[in-house]
Length: 313
Image 1: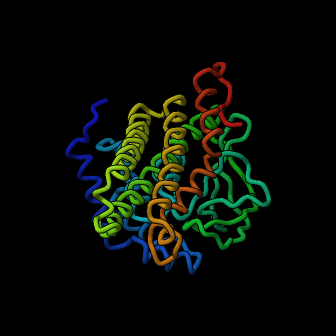
Image 2: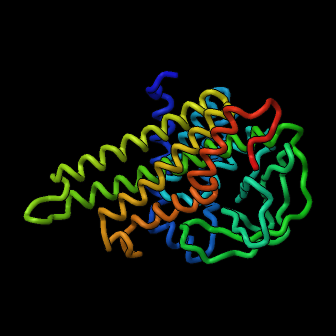
Image 3: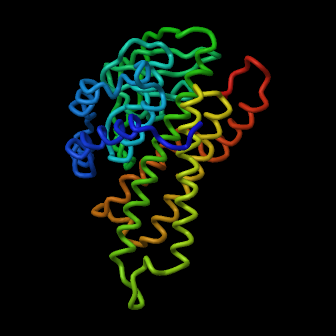
């Protein structure tokens, strides 16, 4: 893999960013969250411009779809890009519109699912097969995640074929990794802006070498997660590479939240400061992935599991 984006791939990222500058961001995210709403307007534009259909486009592909997912996450877009643009086409599901939830296990009665709504769809693995399920009921929940979420009641479901659970889990892990990277990159940008403007002991915090070292280490960890996710998508989602990308990104996400809030201090805990919107999304994504330990176990099982066995447990 060439660790340099092509001109076409850079154009994809720049094109999506242009849309997101007009139709996403902290202010729009706050309005949607207050209403418990999903951003159907942004989704429609992404479909109309072809960005949500890049996975199967002969002139694009999975990596381009992942680049789009990252940009939407970084801009706080409230659209289920991972499910719509990556997981659904990877499973051969015909074009879906509207919010689609993803779950690594059948959801418990008390377990919230991101982007779940009724009527709507949920994709989940059960005993080696992935299923496309209709959501009959959804109890929208007030959360601090910066994502709409609900408890769901599942209706009819359709199998996506033997072995589809492994494929679903691999692409799901890549989207989780990519979304964490997008949110973590935004957190780092907010933190950099803060320390450049914040003065203490008569000097800018950005000039303190101890902070520079911590930020450099954080940047390296986020970049490592980004390229692991890119490689996994570019390679066609091998289970080992997808699991490693998820494990690395969850660890990077947790470190990002810890470092950013520690350095920003009490300011980072206020709702007026935008940092918490991305950091709470990271916490939601890490929880959805199962946390650091679970993702590392998944990576080990993906590497050493017997042929044909299911990764997800």
